[in-house]
Structures are given as C-alpha cells and as structure tokens.
Image 1 (tube, helix red, strand yellow):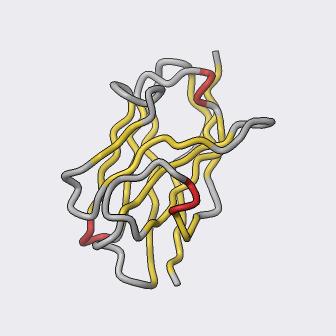
Image 2 (cartoon, helix red, strand yellow):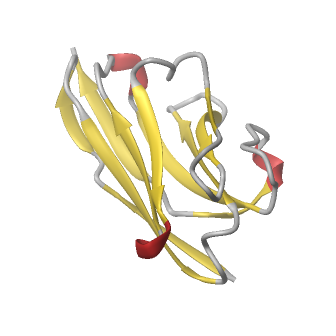
Length: 124
C-alpha cells in the first residue's frame, strides 16, 4: 500500500505561481515513477507531468511545458509540482499518483495509487 497526500493548492491570480507537494508513505517510494494529473469540472482527468525515481527523467503535457516543473526529494518521500505563469484554464483538482512503471508514463491506468487531490483555482 502507498498513501499519497497532496497539499499546496489554493486560489491565485493569473500569472501567479503555486507549488504543490505530494507526501508519500507506505511502500518504498524512491524506486517508482510519480505523476501529476488534473481534472477540471466536466472534463476528463488529464496527465500533467511525471518523474522517474532518480529524478533524471521527466515528462510533461504540452500544456505544462515551459511553465510547470516536476521534482522529487526521495529523502523526504515527497514529489513537487512547481507551477508558474498560471492561467485560468489550469483551474482543476490536481492529483499525484504512484506507478511501478520504469519510465515517466502519461497513461493513468499505469498508476495504481492516487492521492485525494488538491484544488487549484486561477482567477482571471
């Protein structure tokens, strides 16, 4: 079992920044891929970013490239999502997820554990 708890969401104006955190506990955290997804009201959940266990491999959705940065601190069992230049269309519930994949996958069914989500609201 892996438990994931997100934090850091909130209300921010367009152009602002937020840093989301995801604290993991339970099974070994450091050897697995961690991902971020989001779901806006009335829309399907979509991939945002993922990172390998070493931190050397990352993958981003086109909407996140150049604005978001995923990172991890295995000593703290925590993964982060730094979000800059936020836009109203970034408004969503953001989820972190754990995968046993060896590459940073964007496929949600490859993630077996999910956090409860944190709300990000970007006002125009």
